[in-house]
Image (cartoon, rainbow, N blue to C red; front, side):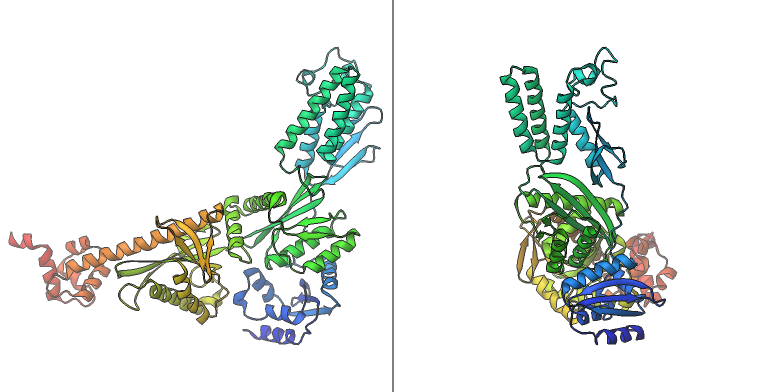
Length: 617
């Protein structure tokens, strides 16, 4: 630990165990990070302890900290409110900041006598009625377009009543039942305006109430023998029901709520938000930011930041995982709304389906942002959730042992970075500590050697290889392998590395994940299951391939030991020098003499052994 970190840690250890806000500053006295803590001493001192336990983003931030300040408050709630306020004022470099720089979109209802429905990018002072603002242009345009089709509203841009009867016949949309043709007087002003009002209700309200109202109008029209009007209303009802059947999010029991999902990969975070009102999805948003904290803390900051930019806070907020400082966040949102706000994690039913949809959106958006596939990002996210990890494992190491009845005992180590094989980081191990068959002892030796190398290079903060600490270790095997390796991690002080085994069934296929206390079923988590299966197959392939190479060399060396003067050591040196037996056969006596430990007499024996027929001739 350098002197600056020691000084800062000593200062942090003098802080009180009380709630407050801490303010990190660089050498120019500029604020670079603002955070809040339930206990200042515990939280701030963590930054200036061992840097090996921090993500790269945190390490970079700590490297730039020259001093810090703090403000003590009465409660965690006050700390959260003060943190949000200070972040807005100073916009520190390393804080999570949602930038609300998207264009807004509106639904416009224009006209007094003859109403007109359209989607607009700007709100003008033109006397029209505007609904919004909405941040999703796609949601607005699709909703307006669907409503225009259902209620047969004109989309031609004509002005009524000025353009009525200017043409002798209606356009194609009338004939394919997409327009009521007010341009040629097919509907009255009252009927047209009622259709526009119903379209607005369809966009902004629930379907059930609208369908009930339309059915009453249809029955009344039929009683009055207005069969054409009744048929038109019937078609509108069927169109609404058909649309509702397509949109699975319409039948929500919770009428008003926002759904938040966070996805993390490669140091980037995507926040996806789905907004519901009257049982309908009416808006969606997503934001990208840097991951500098654990996911519970990221969720808290993102949600607090999100609602600091908005006044319409729903009564129910669904989240995809644990939220740090939950009570303080709920209190802050409740005070801003003026009514109780609930934050919860949906576990089953309709809301769980909505959460999955939101999580899938976050994974796909983040995948596009960082140049990956959405399936890969979602698989890592699902694996983290399954194993109870704080964040998706970006750097996964996997190990497997391979031998033939204890002979040619080797191990393979593979690496998956971002859900994909990183072959430049693959490593092979020859078991040296003992002879014979003992998979547990072999795995212990391999992991010990691996982390001995880590101790030598950990201060270099390498991005791959032995100098990088893995986010997850997966062993090919069950509880026995896991329990054998646990003491190794404890000896190196690396118990924070998640350690699991990959259990196979009797057909050598992935069946479950093993940990110290038992097994975790994985078959019903398709994305995580596929990823773990790929890892298990790859590490098995890599270790078996090395074992076969070793076995082949052993067999080759055995043929060399048949020659007078060549023992096991000389046979290994010869193969190491020439690589293949074919090269040994072609070598001259002078070339053979260049092998370490090989004299001229033995070199001549080897040459004569492979050129016996020539000598006879």
